[in-house]
Length: 299
Ligand SMILES: NC(=O)c1ccc[n+]([C@@H]2O[C@H](COP(=O)([O-])OP(=O)(O)OC[C@H]3O[C@@H](n4cnc5c(N)ncnc54)[C@H](OP(=O)(O)O)[C@@H]3O)[C@@H](O)[C@H]2O)c1
Figure 1 (cartoon, rainbow, N blue to C red):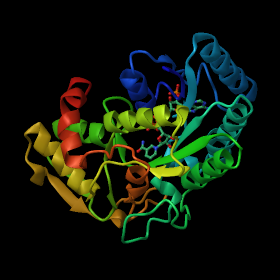
Figure 2 (cartoon, protein in one colour; figure 1 turned 180 degrees about the horizontal axis):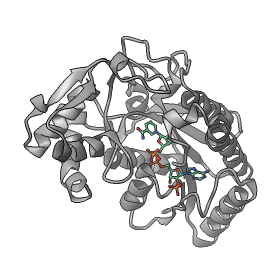
Figure 3 (tube, rainbow, N blue to C red; figure 1 turned 90 degrees about the vertical axis):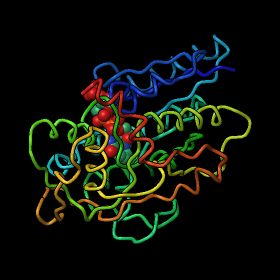
């Protein structure tokens, strides 16, 4: 059977890519916040009800993918109530609606739920301990979804970039044309994740979630393979542009104080993903090369 997908946050960088890569026989609704605001419970319940009813009428399998979030990490420190409303209360309502209408839910979460002081990739069952308000809100969202009784999966990802929206890779492409040198932190490690590969992975999981053999593990990690620092990623962007990577100057986190603390070590182990029989995402460096034509086209 084909899928009927409701993608919340459909105007975001992950949401847009989910729409672009959805299978041809899928029916997709991907509203942005103006059309479906997660903090408006009535609208959320109506949207899930409409999805369940139209899928039943069309003989499709309904799945909700929650790609909506309050993602302004620094602003969240001073806008705590709004961040909790969108990242925790909204998913709670969404998951309850999915539970009562028996619609599977994929909920996207983040490496920021971990303390970020580790020295080996975080497993899904490693102790959490967010250091930022954003991380706290996303963890509360995970708990709400997993405790809702819905057939739900939490997918944690990290260092996401794509051709749309605000992200580090797009910023570096812009700065390459504006500045001679750019200082970039070299003491935070993570795994860059291209929205194209992430969306393909989420859609594979959506098909499994709707089918007869859904993954038993309810928390999964899905990032690009391998790891680097922000400085390493910036240098790779310059290489792709044909610019001199030495124009990127390594610096420390201390030199760039931000309102929200950033994890020093954010690498997630993707073992849960492969153990569930899902296709691992490619190495981050090859993904960047594959993504680059599109990134440049939309710069
Ligand atoms: N970006 C990263 O590096 C990263 C890393 C790890 C995890 N994640 C997670 O990945 C998911 C997708 O993130 P993204 O990078 O695609 O974010 P994004 O580009 O900032 O998009 C966020 C989306 O959420 C929507 N949204 C915001 N407030 C909303 C509300 N009250 N109700 C409904 N929708 C709302 C936005 O809609 P409008 O634009 O219409 O307002 C937008 O479509 C999020 O769960 C995020 O926490 C991201």
